[in-house]
Amino acid sequence: MKPLPRSFYERDPSAVARELLGKVLVHRSGEGLTSGRIVETEAYYGEGDPASRASRGRGGLSEVMWGPGGISFVYMVHGNWLFNAVAFPEGKAGAVLVRALEPLQGLELMRRRRGVEEERELTSGPGKLTEAMGITGLHHGRDLTDPDGELLILPGRRVRRFMRSRRIGVKEDLPERLRFFLPGSPFVSKR
Image 1 (cartoon, rainbow, N blue to C red):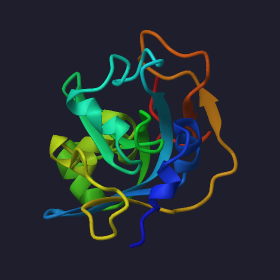
Image 2: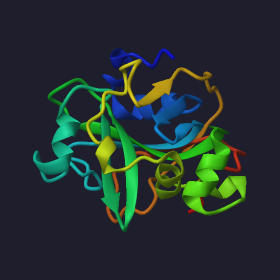
Image 3: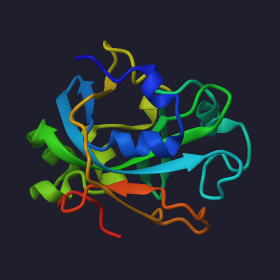
Image 4: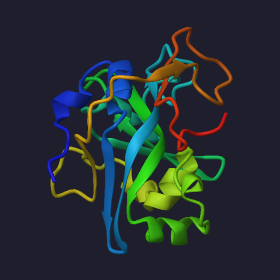
């Protein structure tokens, strides 16, 4: 499996978020392999972005946002792990939240982890997808560009048609529409 190169991530988070649509997130664990096609993302920036984990500056878990692109940024919100890929070159903070996946491989393992049968409910939200994929805080700081890594994002297919909107669940937002999703996908999260 050949993951996306670091150069893919070392760009503006909005471009990375848009182009992650159609790519495939893979988790190789001791329990088995799970994967899903990315159908929804959100871009986040640094100190000027009021909804960003980096809005208050460097430190703690968000320190990884200033590192090289292509590193996993995993943190917990409301009891759910959220999976992000760091974007921008090293020294400039940015990340892309993967909000929803279309399940591809390991559906039975995903069902066991989530405790649900309906395929649409497996990965149709950021907390759902991390639970289904078995992604936790232990995966924070992993290199997504490592072909031998446990977590990686594969090229998948190029998406030409997508929609964008304001980010979901943020109290303060930037004026740009930084949420990207595939129209018509039943796996896109509900508002």
